[in-house]
Length: 367
Image 1 (cartoon, helix red, strand yellow):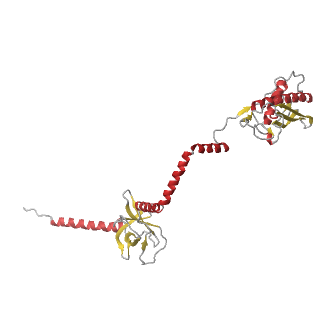
Image 2 (image 1 turned 30 degrees about the horizontal axis):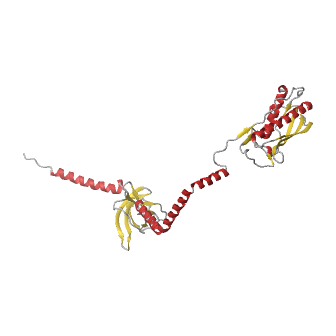
Image 3 (image 1 turned 90 degrees about the vertical axis):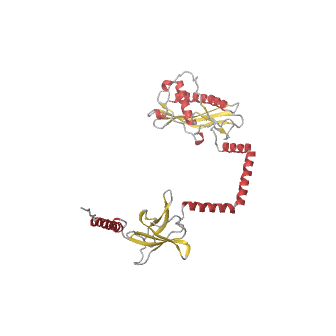
């Protein structure tokens, strides 16, 4: 029995396949793909290197269509006309900005759309004008910039040559006068206080050791507050009369400001006289029976006439009610053979020893 080919079955399968293809295309164009399209005309006012039919169209970074047609403007060959097909739902306006971007390492160009608020009249075709230079790539922009720089250099080659020659002359002059420049800089550094700071030398007052036997002692509690002094005496520097700086004293410092130094050494002197009844600072004692108030009047080196050290104090003993029990001026001076730090400190030590002995004897008798 002869086998008959199933022509009807084969024909039906082919017809069904064709219908499926057409159905898929229809679905892709109207339902599953981008959907209904709208065409817009775009004009680029310059070259569009690399832009091809089928290139993507992005609206705010989202792909909404592609380029369907490219051609030169008949009235101006420098302009390029393009037709883009985008999804109808894309909010393209008559003032939508158009540009050209180059994406990826290979610089594939795509048309970009951004913004827009002016709605075109119904039925009026929308023509979008791209921004000037929209088709210029980074490479082309760099070339144009280098071309402009080259033009500027060519136009100013003479002045540039003269400037370079002047720099060379100036550098040669600096090289020849390096020693002088170093000296000038060193002088400026010294004048402005720059450079490594000089090491300061600190000096202290020495308290008298031999104050004699403590025949009479303090019969009541005594406090010695920090002495008062004018602002000029609130310093650690050596003071001179007449006022001024003296060679060798630039790095001189007392161990503390003059009022605090006098307070500390007076208390030390009372302790050497009678440690058991020695006075304290006002802050170390509650309400003392008496206070020895000191005002520093002079603590300086006098260079006029015979060089000498001068110390002058005014002292008052005040009870807890604020009544002045006793008061006196204590002044002394010490001849100075040489105005230099070590000799000056030795003279201050001798003068202060006499001041301390006199104040201790007077205070003990008054309290």
